[in-house]
Image (cartoon, rainbow over the protein chains, first blue to last red):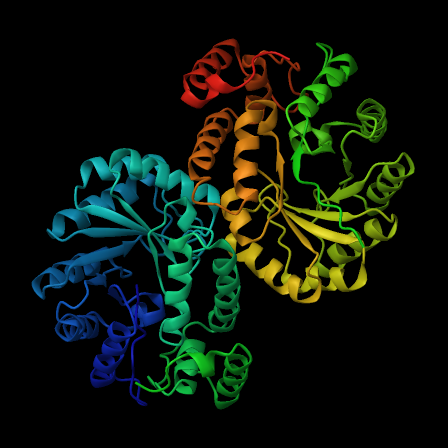
Length: 296
Length: 304
Protein backbone atom coordinates (compact mmCIF):
# COMPACT_ATOMS: atom_id res chain seq x y z
CA UNK A 1 0.00 0.00 0.00
CA UNK A 2 1.50 3.35 -0.97
CA UNK A 3 1.29 6.58 0.98
CA UNK A 4 2.62 9.26 -1.37
CA UNK A 5 4.76 12.20 -0.37
CA UNK A 6 3.35 15.66 -0.98
CA UNK A 7 4.84 17.44 -4.00
CA UNK A 8 5.58 21.11 -3.44
CA UNK A 9 6.77 23.86 -5.78
CA UNK A 10 10.03 25.66 -5.13
CA UNK A 11 8.13 28.32 -3.18
CA UNK A 12 6.69 25.50 -0.99
CA UNK A 13 3.19 25.91 -2.41
CA UNK A 14 1.19 22.79 -3.35
CA UNK A 15 2.12 21.16 -6.64
CA UNK A 16 -1.08 19.39 -7.58
CA UNK A 17 -0.13 18.44 -11.16
CA UNK A 18 2.95 16.57 -9.87
CA UNK A 19 0.79 14.94 -7.20
CA UNK A 20 -1.40 13.57 -10.02
CA UNK A 21 1.70 12.14 -11.73
CA UNK A 22 2.87 10.60 -8.46
CA UNK A 23 -0.47 8.97 -7.73
CA UNK A 24 -0.55 7.56 -11.21
CA UNK A 25 3.01 6.26 -10.83
CA UNK A 26 2.10 4.43 -7.64
CA UNK A 27 -1.00 2.84 -9.14
CA UNK A 28 0.89 1.76 -12.27
CA UNK A 29 3.75 0.26 -10.26
CA UNK A 30 1.65 -2.05 -8.13
CA UNK A 31 0.11 -0.10 -5.25
CA UNK A 32 -2.82 -2.08 -3.89
CA UNK A 33 -4.18 1.04 -2.21
CA UNK A 34 -3.32 4.71 -1.72
CA UNK A 35 -3.31 6.42 1.63
CA UNK A 36 -2.54 10.14 1.97
CA UNK A 37 -1.21 12.21 3.81
CA UNK A 38 0.83 10.19 6.28
CA UNK A 39 3.69 11.86 8.13
CA UNK A 40 5.93 11.24 5.13
CA UNK A 41 3.36 13.34 3.25
CA UNK A 42 4.09 16.20 5.67
CA UNK A 43 0.51 16.08 6.91
CA UNK A 44 1.15 18.34 9.88
CA UNK A 45 2.84 21.00 7.73
CA UNK A 46 -0.20 21.46 5.51
CA UNK A 47 -3.19 23.64 6.24
CA UNK A 48 -6.58 21.99 6.48
CA UNK A 49 -7.56 23.71 3.24
CA UNK A 50 -4.50 22.32 1.49
CA UNK A 51 -5.15 18.84 2.82
CA UNK A 52 -8.67 18.94 1.45
CA UNK A 53 -7.43 20.07 -1.97
CA UNK A 54 -4.83 17.28 -2.17
CA UNK A 55 -7.35 14.68 -0.96
CA UNK A 56 -9.75 15.70 -3.71
CA UNK A 57 -7.01 15.27 -6.30
CA UNK A 58 -6.14 11.85 -4.86
CA UNK A 59 -9.67 10.52 -5.12
CA UNK A 60 -10.19 12.00 -8.57
CA UNK A 61 -6.86 10.81 -10.01
CA UNK A 62 -6.96 7.30 -8.62
CA UNK A 63 -10.54 7.14 -9.87
CA UNK A 64 -11.45 3.85 -8.26
CA UNK A 65 -8.49 1.87 -9.62
CA UNK A 66 -7.48 1.08 -6.04
CA UNK A 67 -9.03 2.19 -2.73
CA UNK A 68 -8.03 5.60 -1.34
CA UNK A 69 -7.92 6.29 2.37
CA UNK A 70 -7.38 9.73 3.87
CA UNK A 71 -5.23 10.26 6.94
CA UNK A 72 -7.26 12.72 9.00
CA UNK A 73 -5.02 13.14 12.05
CA UNK A 74 -4.41 16.78 12.95
CA UNK A 75 -3.22 18.59 16.04
CA UNK A 76 -6.78 19.62 16.82
CA UNK A 77 -9.31 16.84 17.06
CA UNK A 78 -11.88 19.27 15.63
CA UNK A 79 -9.80 19.46 12.46
CA UNK A 80 -9.61 15.67 12.33
CA UNK A 81 -13.38 15.45 12.46
CA UNK A 82 -13.69 18.00 9.69
CA UNK A 83 -11.17 16.15 7.52
CA UNK A 84 -13.01 12.90 8.12
CA UNK A 85 -16.30 14.40 7.00
CA UNK A 86 -14.61 15.92 3.99
CA UNK A 87 -13.11 12.54 3.06
CA UNK A 88 -16.57 11.06 2.99
CA UNK A 89 -17.96 13.92 0.91
CA UNK A 90 -15.33 13.53 -1.79
CA UNK A 91 -15.77 9.78 -2.08
CA UNK A 92 -12.74 8.41 -0.28
CA UNK A 93 -12.93 4.75 0.66
CA UNK A 94 -11.73 5.00 4.28
CA UNK A 95 -10.15 7.22 6.87
CA UNK A 96 -7.11 6.51 9.01
CA UNK A 97 -6.27 8.24 12.31
CA UNK A 98 -3.43 8.09 14.83
CA UNK A 99 -3.89 8.56 18.58
CA UNK A 100 -4.07 12.30 19.46
CA UNK A 101 -0.87 14.31 19.19
CA UNK A 102 1.11 16.02 21.95
CA UNK A 103 -1.16 15.30 24.91
CA UNK A 104 -0.69 12.01 26.72
CA UNK A 105 -4.30 10.83 26.57
CA UNK A 106 -5.58 8.08 28.82
CA UNK A 107 -6.91 4.85 27.34
CA UNK A 108 -10.40 6.20 28.00
CA UNK A 109 -9.61 9.42 26.12
CA UNK A 110 -8.23 7.43 23.18
CA UNK A 111 -11.38 5.32 23.23
CA UNK A 112 -13.60 8.44 23.14
CA UNK A 113 -11.48 9.90 20.34
CA UNK A 114 -12.11 6.95 18.05
CA UNK A 115 -15.77 6.68 19.03
CA UNK A 116 -16.21 10.29 18.02
CA UNK A 117 -14.32 9.87 14.75
CA UNK A 118 -16.25 6.72 13.99
CA UNK A 119 -19.54 8.53 14.45
CA UNK A 120 -18.45 11.47 12.28
CA UNK A 121 -18.70 9.47 9.06
CA UNK A 122 -19.99 6.21 7.72
CA UNK A 123 -16.58 5.39 6.21
CA UNK A 124 -14.50 2.40 7.33
CA UNK A 125 -11.86 3.56 9.79
CA UNK A 126 -8.26 2.45 10.31
CA UNK A 127 -6.60 3.13 13.67
CA UNK A 128 -2.90 3.93 13.76
CA UNK A 129 -0.62 2.80 16.60
CA UNK A 130 2.76 4.54 16.72
CA UNK A 131 4.08 4.60 20.30
CA UNK A 132 7.65 5.54 19.48
CA UNK A 133 6.61 8.82 17.86
CA UNK A 134 3.95 9.63 20.47
CA UNK A 135 5.78 9.32 23.78
CA UNK A 136 4.62 5.77 24.35
CA UNK A 137 0.92 6.48 23.84
CA UNK A 138 -0.41 3.27 22.39
CA UNK A 139 -3.27 0.85 22.04
CA UNK A 140 -3.65 -1.99 24.49
CA UNK A 141 -5.37 -5.22 23.49
CA UNK A 142 -8.17 -4.33 25.88
CA UNK A 143 -8.76 -0.98 24.19
CA UNK A 144 -8.80 -2.58 20.76
CA UNK A 145 -11.40 -5.10 21.93
CA UNK A 146 -13.56 -2.38 23.43
CA UNK A 147 -13.36 -0.20 20.33
CA UNK A 148 -14.15 -3.05 17.99
CA UNK A 149 -17.30 -3.82 19.97
CA UNK A 150 -18.44 -0.21 20.02
CA UNK A 151 -17.18 1.14 16.68
CA UNK A 152 -18.30 -1.20 13.90
CA UNK A 153 -16.54 0.90 11.27
CA UNK A 154 -13.11 0.11 12.77
CA UNK A 155 -11.82 -2.38 10.23
CA UNK A 156 -8.05 -2.29 10.54
CA UNK A 157 -4.99 -1.01 12.33
CA UNK A 158 -1.75 0.45 11.06
CA UNK A 159 0.64 -1.06 13.61
CA UNK A 160 3.93 0.77 13.84
CA UNK A 161 5.37 -0.38 17.15
CA UNK A 162 7.60 -2.83 15.24
CA UNK A 163 7.49 -5.02 18.32
CA UNK A 164 6.48 -8.69 18.44
CA UNK A 165 4.74 -8.54 21.81
CA UNK A 166 2.68 -5.46 20.94
CA UNK A 167 1.77 -6.86 17.52
CA UNK A 168 0.53 -10.09 19.08
CA UNK A 169 -1.27 -8.27 21.89
CA UNK A 170 -3.27 -6.30 19.34
CA UNK A 171 -3.79 -9.05 16.80
CA UNK A 172 -4.90 -11.62 19.37
CA UNK A 173 -7.41 -9.16 20.83
CA UNK A 174 -8.70 -7.97 17.46
CA UNK A 175 -9.00 -11.31 15.70
CA UNK A 176 -11.00 -12.73 18.59
CA UNK A 177 -13.63 -10.07 18.03
CA UNK A 178 -13.54 -10.14 14.23
CA UNK A 179 -11.41 -12.65 12.32
CA UNK A 180 -11.40 -10.41 9.23
CA UNK A 181 -9.85 -7.44 11.04
CA UNK A 182 -6.72 -6.34 9.19
CA UNK A 183 -3.40 -5.44 10.73
CA UNK A 184 -1.05 -3.54 8.47
CA UNK A 185 2.59 -2.82 9.29
CA UNK A 186 3.89 0.71 9.27
CA UNK A 187 6.94 0.81 6.97
CA UNK A 188 7.84 -2.38 5.08
CA UNK A 189 8.62 -4.58 8.10
CA UNK A 190 6.91 -7.50 6.43
CA UNK A 191 9.28 -10.43 7.09
CA UNK A 192 8.75 -10.35 10.87
CA UNK A 193 5.05 -9.48 10.70
CA UNK A 194 3.42 -11.47 7.88
CA UNK A 195 3.97 -14.82 9.68
CA UNK A 196 2.06 -13.31 12.61
CA UNK A 197 -0.92 -12.45 10.39
CA UNK A 198 0.00 -9.02 9.06
CA UNK A 199 -1.70 -8.45 5.70
CA UNK A 200 0.48 -5.72 4.21
CA UNK A 201 2.31 -2.50 4.90
CA UNK A 202 2.24 1.22 4.38
CA UNK A 203 5.30 1.65 2.23
CA UNK A 204 8.01 4.14 2.99
CA UNK A 205 10.20 3.49 -0.03
CA UNK A 206 7.59 2.80 -2.71
CA UNK A 207 8.30 6.02 -4.54
CA UNK A 208 11.93 4.94 -4.91
CA UNK A 209 11.80 1.18 -5.39
CA UNK A 210 8.29 -0.16 -6.05
CA UNK A 211 9.69 -3.37 -7.54
CA UNK A 212 11.62 -4.23 -4.39
CA UNK A 213 8.56 -3.52 -2.22
CA UNK A 214 6.42 -5.83 -4.33
CA UNK A 215 9.07 -8.55 -4.35
CA UNK A 216 9.30 -8.46 -0.56
CA UNK A 217 5.55 -8.65 -0.16
CA UNK A 218 5.33 -11.56 -2.61
CA UNK A 219 8.15 -13.48 -0.88
CA UNK A 220 6.50 -13.03 2.51
CA UNK A 221 3.10 -14.16 1.28
CA UNK A 222 4.69 -17.18 -0.46
CA UNK A 223 6.46 -18.13 2.79
CA UNK A 224 9.87 -17.87 1.13
CA UNK A 225 11.64 -16.92 4.37
CA UNK A 226 15.18 -16.86 3.03
CA UNK A 227 14.35 -14.57 0.11
CA UNK A 228 12.13 -12.42 2.33
CA UNK A 229 14.98 -11.91 4.81
CA UNK A 230 17.39 -10.91 2.06
CA UNK A 231 14.93 -8.39 0.62
CA UNK A 232 13.98 -7.15 4.08
CA UNK A 233 17.62 -6.40 4.86
CA UNK A 234 17.92 -4.43 1.64
CA UNK A 235 14.80 -2.42 2.43
CA UNK A 236 16.10 -1.88 5.95
CA UNK A 237 19.21 -0.25 4.49
CA UNK A 238 16.95 2.02 2.47
CA UNK A 239 14.85 2.77 5.54
CA UNK A 240 18.03 3.78 7.38
CA UNK A 241 18.92 6.04 4.50
CA UNK A 242 15.51 7.71 4.33
CA UNK A 243 14.57 7.90 8.00
CA UNK A 244 17.48 10.27 8.44
CA UNK A 245 15.75 13.60 7.79
CA UNK A 246 12.52 11.82 6.84
CA UNK A 247 10.87 12.61 4.50
CA UNK A 248 13.32 15.10 2.99
CA UNK A 249 15.78 12.31 2.18
CA UNK A 250 12.98 10.46 0.47
CA UNK A 251 12.23 13.50 -1.64
CA UNK A 252 15.96 13.81 -2.33
CA UNK A 253 15.99 10.19 -3.48
CA UNK A 254 13.06 10.86 -5.77
CA UNK A 255 15.15 13.50 -7.55
CA UNK A 256 17.78 10.81 -8.12
CA UNK A 257 15.12 8.47 -9.50
CA UNK A 258 13.93 11.13 -11.97
CA UNK A 259 10.74 11.88 -10.10
CA UNK A 260 11.34 15.27 -8.46
CA UNK A 261 8.65 16.41 -6.07
CA UNK A 262 10.16 19.63 -4.76
CA UNK A 263 11.33 20.74 -1.34
CA UNK A 264 10.20 19.81 2.16
CA UNK A 265 8.44 22.43 4.24
CA UNK A 266 10.13 23.79 7.37
CA UNK A 267 10.77 22.88 10.09
CA UNK A 268 11.87 19.79 8.16
CA UNK A 269 14.98 20.30 6.05
CA UNK A 270 15.16 19.97 2.29
CA UNK A 271 17.75 17.54 0.97
CA UNK A 272 20.78 19.50 -0.22
CA UNK A 273 22.66 18.71 -3.44
CA UNK A 274 25.31 17.03 -1.28
CA UNK A 275 22.70 14.92 0.47
CA UNK A 276 21.19 13.99 -2.89
CA UNK A 277 24.62 12.94 -4.13
CA UNK A 278 25.11 10.78 -1.04
CA UNK A 279 21.69 9.19 -1.57
CA UNK A 280 22.49 8.60 -5.24
CA UNK A 281 25.68 6.77 -4.28
CA UNK A 282 23.84 4.62 -1.76
CA UNK A 283 21.10 3.78 -4.26
CA UNK A 284 23.71 2.83 -6.82
CA UNK A 285 25.51 0.55 -4.36
CA UNK A 286 22.24 -1.14 -3.48
CA UNK A 287 21.51 -1.75 -7.16
CA UNK A 288 18.35 0.34 -7.03
CA UNK A 289 19.30 2.48 -10.03
CA UNK A 290 19.51 -0.62 -12.24
CA UNK A 291 16.42 -2.43 -11.04
CA UNK A 292 13.83 0.25 -10.42
CA UNK A 293 11.95 2.58 -12.80
CA UNK A 294 13.51 5.94 -13.62
CA UNK A 295 11.25 8.92 -14.33
CA UNK A 296 7.49 8.95 -14.24
CA UNK B 1 36.37 -22.89 12.89
CA UNK B 2 33.26 -24.40 14.43
CA UNK B 3 30.67 -21.96 15.75
CA UNK B 4 28.99 -22.60 19.07
CA UNK B 5 25.24 -22.30 18.54
CA UNK B 6 23.30 -22.58 21.80
CA UNK B 7 20.01 -23.67 20.15
CA UNK B 8 16.99 -23.97 22.44
CA UNK B 9 18.29 -22.53 25.70
CA UNK B 10 16.27 -23.18 28.85
CA UNK B 11 16.74 -20.59 31.61
CA UNK B 12 16.05 -22.30 34.95
CA UNK B 13 14.66 -20.41 37.91
CA UNK B 14 16.39 -20.51 41.28
CA UNK B 15 14.43 -22.66 43.76
CA UNK B 16 14.37 -21.32 47.29
CA UNK B 17 13.59 -23.00 50.59
CA UNK B 18 11.01 -21.41 52.88
CA UNK B 19 13.80 -19.44 54.54
CA UNK B 20 14.83 -18.17 51.07
CA UNK B 21 18.10 -20.09 50.76
CA UNK B 22 18.93 -21.79 47.47
CA UNK B 23 17.26 -25.20 47.53
CA UNK B 24 19.88 -27.35 45.84
CA UNK B 25 18.00 -30.61 45.99
CA UNK B 26 15.13 -28.93 44.14
CA UNK B 27 17.61 -27.26 41.79
CA UNK B 28 18.99 -30.67 40.88
CA UNK B 29 15.46 -31.86 40.14
CA UNK B 30 14.82 -28.75 38.07
CA UNK B 31 17.96 -29.10 35.97
CA UNK B 32 17.08 -32.73 35.26
CA UNK B 33 13.57 -31.65 34.26
CA UNK B 34 14.92 -29.14 31.74
CA UNK B 35 17.31 -31.70 30.29
CA UNK B 36 14.54 -34.28 29.99
CA UNK B 37 12.33 -31.71 28.25
CA UNK B 38 14.73 -31.03 25.42
CA UNK B 39 16.96 -28.16 26.53
CA UNK B 40 19.84 -27.92 24.05
CA UNK B 41 21.71 -25.55 26.39
CA UNK B 42 21.11 -24.09 29.83
CA UNK B 43 21.71 -20.45 30.80
CA UNK B 44 22.72 -20.12 34.45
CA UNK B 45 21.19 -17.86 35.86
CA UNK B 46 19.16 -15.31 33.91
CA UNK B 47 16.79 -12.68 35.31
CA UNK B 48 14.00 -15.28 35.36
CA UNK B 49 16.22 -17.10 37.84
CA UNK B 50 16.58 -13.97 39.96
CA UNK B 51 20.28 -13.54 39.25
CA UNK B 52 20.19 -9.99 40.58
CA UNK B 53 18.85 -11.26 43.92
CA UNK B 54 21.78 -13.66 44.37
CA UNK B 55 25.15 -12.82 45.91
CA UNK B 56 28.27 -13.22 43.84
CA UNK B 57 29.16 -16.27 45.91
CA UNK B 58 25.72 -17.79 45.30
CA UNK B 59 25.98 -17.19 41.56
CA UNK B 60 29.35 -18.89 41.42
CA UNK B 61 28.05 -21.76 43.54
CA UNK B 62 25.18 -22.19 41.10
CA UNK B 63 27.60 -22.28 38.16
CA UNK B 64 29.61 -25.00 39.90
CA UNK B 65 26.56 -27.00 40.90
CA UNK B 66 25.07 -26.87 37.40
CA UNK B 67 28.40 -27.84 35.87
CA UNK B 68 28.66 -30.91 38.08
CA UNK B 69 25.02 -31.90 37.71
CA UNK B 70 24.77 -31.49 33.95
CA UNK B 71 28.16 -33.12 33.50
CA UNK B 72 28.60 -32.24 29.85
CA UNK B 73 25.19 -33.37 28.60
CA UNK B 74 24.46 -29.90 27.22
CA UNK B 75 26.49 -26.66 27.05
CA UNK B 76 26.16 -24.20 29.92
CA UNK B 77 26.03 -20.45 29.36
CA UNK B 78 27.09 -18.33 32.31
CA UNK B 79 25.16 -15.10 32.86
CA UNK B 80 27.70 -12.80 34.51
CA UNK B 81 26.02 -9.37 34.40
CA UNK B 82 26.65 -6.93 37.23
CA UNK B 83 26.95 -3.20 37.90
CA UNK B 84 30.73 -3.20 38.12
CA UNK B 85 32.82 -4.23 35.15
CA UNK B 86 35.44 -5.95 37.31
CA UNK B 87 32.82 -7.94 39.21
CA UNK B 88 31.28 -9.12 35.96
CA UNK B 89 34.58 -10.04 34.32
CA UNK B 90 35.81 -11.95 37.36
CA UNK B 91 32.57 -13.93 37.38
CA UNK B 92 33.15 -14.66 33.69
CA UNK B 93 36.66 -15.85 34.43
CA UNK B 94 35.33 -18.13 37.11
CA UNK B 95 32.78 -19.58 34.68
CA UNK B 96 35.57 -20.27 32.21
CA UNK B 97 37.79 -21.81 34.87
CA UNK B 98 35.19 -24.43 35.76
CA UNK B 99 34.51 -25.33 32.14
CA UNK B 100 31.30 -23.52 31.22
CA UNK B 101 30.84 -22.99 27.48
CA UNK B 102 29.87 -19.32 26.99
CA UNK B 103 29.32 -16.02 28.73
CA UNK B 104 26.26 -13.75 28.63
CA UNK B 105 26.44 -10.11 29.69
CA UNK B 106 23.96 -7.20 29.77
CA UNK B 107 24.62 -3.49 30.01
CA UNK B 108 25.58 -2.61 33.61
CA UNK B 109 22.84 -2.48 36.24
CA UNK B 110 21.72 0.87 37.64
CA UNK B 111 24.35 3.09 35.98
CA UNK B 112 23.63 4.92 32.76
CA UNK B 113 27.15 5.21 31.34
CA UNK B 114 27.87 6.96 28.05
CA UNK B 115 28.20 4.75 24.97
CA UNK B 116 32.03 4.60 25.04
CA UNK B 117 31.90 3.25 28.60
CA UNK B 118 29.26 0.66 27.69
CA UNK B 119 31.60 -0.46 24.94
CA UNK B 120 34.46 -0.53 27.45
CA UNK B 121 32.35 -2.66 29.81
CA UNK B 122 31.71 -5.24 27.10
CA UNK B 123 35.31 -5.10 25.88
CA UNK B 124 36.74 -5.76 29.33
CA UNK B 125 34.37 -8.62 30.15
CA UNK B 126 34.85 -10.29 26.78
CA UNK B 127 38.63 -9.80 26.88
CA UNK B 128 38.78 -11.54 30.24
CA UNK B 129 37.80 -14.90 28.71
CA UNK B 130 38.31 -16.95 25.59
CA UNK B 131 34.73 -18.24 25.67
CA UNK B 132 32.10 -17.16 23.15
CA UNK B 133 30.64 -13.90 24.45
CA UNK B 134 26.99 -12.95 24.01
CA UNK B 135 25.47 -9.53 24.72
CA UNK B 136 21.98 -9.69 26.21
CA UNK B 137 19.91 -6.71 25.08
CA UNK B 138 16.89 -5.87 27.16
CA UNK B 139 16.46 -2.08 27.22
CA UNK B 140 13.11 -2.14 29.03
CA UNK B 141 14.67 -3.99 31.95
CA UNK B 142 17.86 -1.95 31.95
CA UNK B 143 16.60 1.58 32.43
CA UNK B 144 16.12 2.23 28.75
CA UNK B 145 19.83 2.01 27.88
CA UNK B 146 19.97 1.38 24.17
CA UNK B 147 22.75 -0.05 22.08
CA UNK B 148 23.60 1.43 18.71
CA UNK B 149 24.63 -0.47 15.61
CA UNK B 150 27.86 1.50 15.69
CA UNK B 151 28.71 0.24 19.20
CA UNK B 152 27.98 -3.35 18.24
CA UNK B 153 30.10 -3.06 15.09
CA UNK B 154 32.99 -1.72 17.17
CA UNK B 155 32.69 -4.66 19.54
CA UNK B 156 32.62 -7.04 16.57
CA UNK B 157 35.76 -5.43 15.20
CA UNK B 158 37.65 -5.59 18.47
CA UNK B 159 36.53 -8.87 20.01
CA UNK B 160 36.81 -12.07 17.98
CA UNK B 161 34.94 -13.97 20.71
CA UNK B 162 31.89 -11.68 20.43
CA UNK B 163 29.60 -14.42 19.14
CA UNK B 164 26.15 -12.87 19.10
CA UNK B 165 23.32 -10.69 20.35
CA UNK B 166 20.53 -12.02 22.52
CA UNK B 167 17.59 -9.75 21.81
CA UNK B 168 14.87 -9.22 24.37
CA UNK B 169 13.86 -5.83 23.01
CA UNK B 170 11.51 -7.51 20.49
CA UNK B 171 12.29 -4.51 18.32
CA UNK B 172 12.28 -5.50 14.65
CA UNK B 173 14.10 -2.36 13.55
CA UNK B 174 16.89 -2.95 16.04
CA UNK B 175 17.30 -6.62 15.21
CA UNK B 176 17.26 -6.09 11.44
CA UNK B 177 19.69 -3.24 11.72
CA UNK B 178 22.15 -5.10 13.89
CA UNK B 179 22.13 -8.40 12.10
CA UNK B 180 22.09 -7.08 8.54
CA UNK B 181 25.06 -4.82 9.28
CA UNK B 182 27.09 -7.30 11.31
CA UNK B 183 26.59 -10.15 8.83
CA UNK B 184 28.37 -8.08 6.17
CA UNK B 185 31.46 -8.19 8.42
CA UNK B 186 31.03 -11.46 10.26
CA UNK B 187 28.58 -13.93 8.71
CA UNK B 188 28.87 -16.37 11.61
CA UNK B 189 27.59 -13.74 14.09
CA UNK B 190 24.43 -14.98 15.77
CA UNK B 191 21.10 -13.47 16.66
CA UNK B 192 19.33 -15.19 19.56
CA UNK B 193 15.76 -14.51 20.65
CA UNK B 194 16.01 -13.46 24.28
CA UNK B 195 12.49 -14.67 25.01
CA UNK B 196 9.84 -16.74 23.33
CA UNK B 197 8.84 -14.38 20.48
CA UNK B 198 10.72 -16.57 18.03
CA UNK B 199 8.65 -16.18 14.85
CA UNK B 200 9.61 -12.58 14.09
CA UNK B 201 13.14 -13.00 15.47
CA UNK B 202 13.62 -16.16 13.39
CA UNK B 203 12.30 -14.48 10.24
CA UNK B 204 14.93 -11.81 10.81
CA UNK B 205 17.67 -14.40 11.33
CA UNK B 206 17.65 -15.68 14.92
CA UNK B 207 18.85 -19.26 15.25
CA UNK B 208 18.66 -19.77 19.02
CA UNK B 209 16.07 -18.90 21.65
CA UNK B 210 16.20 -18.40 25.41
CA UNK B 211 13.11 -19.56 27.27
CA UNK B 212 11.93 -19.10 30.83
CA UNK B 213 8.52 -20.51 29.90
CA UNK B 214 10.21 -23.84 29.28
CA UNK B 215 9.67 -24.51 33.00
CA UNK B 216 5.91 -24.26 32.44
CA UNK B 217 5.18 -25.41 28.89
CA UNK B 218 8.28 -27.17 27.60
CA UNK B 219 6.45 -29.05 24.84
CA UNK B 220 4.94 -25.88 23.40
CA UNK B 221 8.31 -24.13 23.56
CA UNK B 222 10.01 -27.02 21.80
CA UNK B 223 7.30 -27.10 19.14
CA UNK B 224 7.65 -23.37 18.50
CA UNK B 225 11.42 -23.53 18.31
CA UNK B 226 11.49 -26.62 16.13
CA UNK B 227 9.08 -25.22 13.54
CA UNK B 228 10.94 -21.93 13.45
CA UNK B 229 14.22 -23.70 12.79
CA UNK B 230 12.70 -25.13 9.61
CA UNK B 231 12.07 -21.50 8.57
CA UNK B 232 8.33 -22.21 8.20
CA UNK B 233 7.27 -19.19 10.19
CA UNK B 234 3.68 -19.09 8.99
CA UNK B 235 3.25 -22.64 10.30
CA UNK B 236 4.67 -21.54 13.64
CA UNK B 237 2.00 -18.87 14.10
CA UNK B 238 -0.35 -20.99 16.23
CA UNK B 239 2.41 -22.05 18.59
CA UNK B 240 3.56 -18.42 18.78
CA UNK B 241 0.03 -17.26 19.60
CA UNK B 242 -0.23 -19.90 22.32
CA UNK B 243 3.07 -18.75 23.78
CA UNK B 244 1.85 -15.14 23.68
CA UNK B 245 -1.33 -16.15 25.52
CA UNK B 246 0.77 -17.83 28.18
CA UNK B 247 3.09 -14.84 28.52
CA UNK B 248 0.19 -12.39 28.77
CA UNK B 249 -1.37 -14.49 31.49
CA UNK B 250 1.76 -14.90 33.59
CA UNK B 251 2.98 -11.33 33.14
CA UNK B 252 -0.30 -10.02 34.55
CA UNK B 253 0.87 -11.29 37.91
CA UNK B 254 4.27 -9.65 37.84
CA UNK B 255 7.53 -11.42 38.60
CA UNK B 256 5.93 -13.85 41.05
CA UNK B 257 3.74 -15.23 38.27
CA UNK B 258 6.45 -17.49 36.86
CA UNK B 259 7.08 -19.44 40.04
CA UNK B 260 3.38 -19.51 40.84
CA UNK B 261 2.69 -21.02 37.40
CA UNK B 262 5.43 -23.59 37.99
CA UNK B 263 3.80 -24.49 41.29
CA UNK B 264 0.49 -24.86 39.47
CA UNK B 265 2.17 -27.30 37.10
CA UNK B 266 3.36 -29.39 40.04
CA UNK B 267 6.89 -28.05 40.05
CA UNK B 268 7.12 -25.97 43.19
CA UNK B 269 10.34 -23.98 43.44
CA UNK B 270 9.30 -21.84 46.37
CA UNK B 271 8.67 -18.11 46.44
CA UNK B 272 10.81 -15.44 44.81
CA UNK B 273 13.24 -13.57 47.05
CA UNK B 274 12.44 -10.03 48.17
CA UNK B 275 11.97 -7.44 46.81
CA UNK B 276 9.62 -9.57 44.71
CA UNK B 277 6.34 -10.51 46.31
CA UNK B 278 4.95 -14.01 46.05
CA UNK B 279 1.37 -14.25 44.82
CA UNK B 280 -1.33 -14.34 47.47
CA UNK B 281 -3.19 -17.67 47.81
CA UNK B 282 -6.19 -16.28 45.96
CA UNK B 283 -4.00 -14.85 43.15
CA UNK B 284 -2.25 -18.19 42.88
CA UNK B 285 -5.55 -20.00 42.64
CA UNK B 286 -6.83 -17.67 39.93
CA UNK B 287 -3.60 -18.00 37.96
CA UNK B 288 -3.67 -21.76 38.32
CA UNK B 289 -7.24 -21.97 37.06
CA UNK B 290 -6.53 -19.65 34.13
CA UNK B 291 -3.40 -21.62 33.28
CA UNK B 292 -5.19 -24.95 33.19
CA UNK B 293 -8.04 -23.41 31.20
CA UNK B 294 -5.68 -22.74 28.28
CA UNK B 295 -6.46 -25.63 25.92
CA UNK B 296 -2.87 -26.30 24.88
CA UNK B 297 -1.71 -26.67 28.49
CA UNK B 298 -3.32 -30.10 28.75
CA UNK B 299 -0.42 -31.48 26.70
CA UNK B 300 2.19 -30.19 29.13
CA UNK B 301 3.84 -32.31 31.82
CA UNK B 302 2.46 -32.08 35.35
CA UNK B 303 5.00 -32.62 38.13
CA UNK B 304 8.63 -33.47 37.69
